[in-house]
Image (cartoon, rainbow, N blue to C red; front, side, top):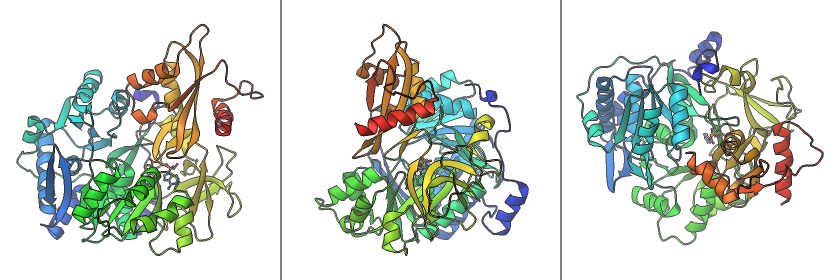
Length: 550
Ligand code: OOB
């Protein structure tokens, strides 16, 4: 895609008067992530900052060591020619090097573009092209995939990419051994990194987050989740995702002077082993994983008694599951409802049980503005609010919610209201206490147990098949994942693509495995009567209703 096709400014800052207000109220403190790490190293010196495994070895780094490693990597990046404002696609699983590498980039003022380990060629190429990345930072073989080879293929196809850096390689070891040097601190109000949107139209959008805004959400998350220097946070999910990164995540843990333990995999065996060995006090999972842990806890011989809090979010945690968590795992449930675009809601640790079991929490900040508006009007204004307590579409604006995606002026015109509210696409009800209950979704997205699939992105892959005339991807209910994907496909006349062939076709186009349709129904025409030739949106709604009936 030609990034210049979506003309307009690269990113949309907060209006100056609003930014001044966020500074005056102390939300934005003018501190960068690099400066934060320096002060953490001064305060917590030889306390353990990070524990992680790679290539069969366990690393255990103090705050001082983490700080020093980040300094060396920053210097190595500068010697390589990486400059402030450069973008670097980072595709790292939960390896210890994630932290010094990302803080190294932050010290340089370069922007990590956070890909997930599941992403493949087509997605990485899109991130590199859309951001104009100068480098890709990845690992070698991980979970039977050669990430270095994928990164090299991306570099060969995207002109801006000059370097592929592979953690564990001799080149990376050299870079990480560079003598530290003084570097100017980047602008705290400037962009620190690009996160990925779950997406609903086409390919994932890039989300520009600043040092100021993100650090505010990290600081408050650490406080709301009661992180202390003697807390131990387990990053069970892939750490580049906004949830384990900052809600409260590894950054919240570091901020509190606590220890972060990186789980190489999120399964109960791995997580329980680490909880016992490291005395983990708090971790965060998606609902299907919470369900798996609850089941496994009944049979485990591991000692989980150190666990105080289990955060559950990323997708709706139903009441039934919510009720089983405390008794099964011997900890307090904390629900979290967040989004990479900004807004994060938590149930509070001292909330009444009923709210913890039935809501997805309330916003971090008193300055998070919430509007619940007409759900039937995709262009509803922030003033089109539904009566108190009724279901509506959630709009939000605030000190850590973006005002626009990166290089996406066209999309921004519909994704945000004229007065700067982000249209989350979530349907919610608000309680008198200000807690939100997520009851559904208006966006064209499938939430596959926390992993987000944009219907249109998968449809476009399917329609690239020569035998496919049209495709519509919808969510179908799933006992374990909550939802999974079903693709309805109309073949071109005379063609007869099969479901396995189409699934393989999508996979081989180089997409994350979670985007390959779980079910494919090849149909003569879309089996929807009375819909006529309507928008894809209406078609999806009708198909989803049909799929739900079974
Ligand atoms: C988190 O971030 P994203 O960007 O992957 O996805 C955001 C979307 C929300 O708009 C909503 O549709 C859904 O994920 N979601 C939930 C939820 N938490 C997220 N839907 C129902 N209940 C929940 N508790 O998923 C994310 C980011 C930070 C913290 C936690 C999750």
